[in-house]
Image 1: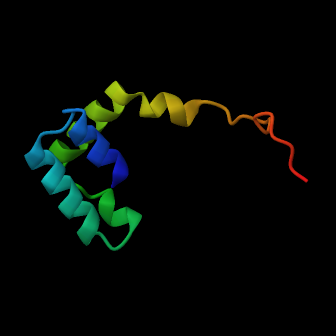
Image 2 (image 1 turned 60 degrees about the vertical axis):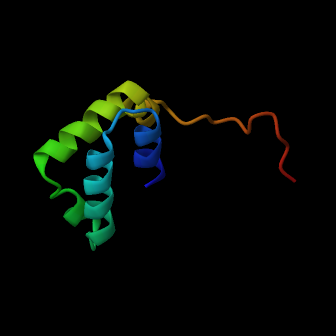
Length: 72
């Protein structure tokens, strides 16, 4: 939900799209139910995700270092 809230804040989703997507996610009982979201709403999420670079973030290999922190 935080991601779609950010999409709304950045004006990448309309308030109506945000409301509909939020409602769909809230009523979904499983990830499979979320995947049944209407195509129009999926396209809105996909467009916003592309602008935000979410796919690029997901495709980036994980950092294998500890960021300079020492764990003991």
